[in-house]
Amino acid sequence: MKKLVMLLGAAVMAVPAPFVVSAPAHAAANPAVDYCRQIVASGELPNLTLGNCVALLTTVANYENGLPGDGYATQVCRLYEQNYPEIIDDEFGGYSACVQALHDAVQGG
Image 1 (tube, rainbow, N blue to C red):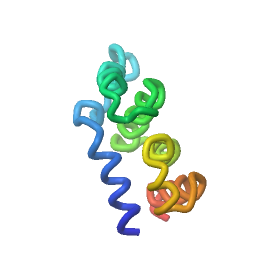
Image 2 (cartoon, rainbow, N blue to C red; image 1 turned 45 degrees about the horizontal axis):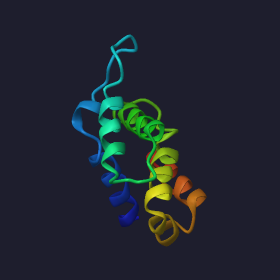
Image 3 (cartoon, rainbow, N blue to C red; image 1 turned 180 degrees about the vertical axis):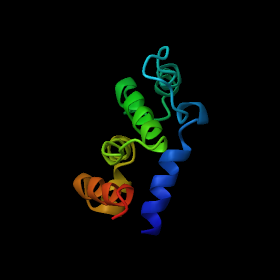
Image 4 (cartoon, one colour; image 1 turned 90 degrees about the vertical axis):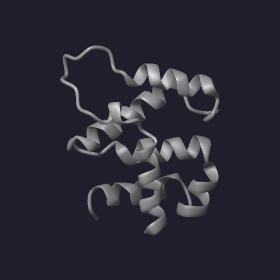
């Protein structure tokens, strides 16, 4: 469980503060898009796509702002599966187990 909490913490801490603040539905363009373009262009996460990055940051922001975190586990596990598969294999034994463990943790289970 300690590693699970660390994984969740690392995923949330990777999100810059401005993207964790809620914005009205009618707000301007999602600021995560420009940030994600920079991350994708940097090559730090070679298998991260712009769409996956924006989805992850949007899901984390929603979760941090009290909205349901249903997609949170899927997004975090996808990020790790595509860029750090050894974490998925070593810590969880596979993608599905990662999603289930993080989903349970987010739901308080």
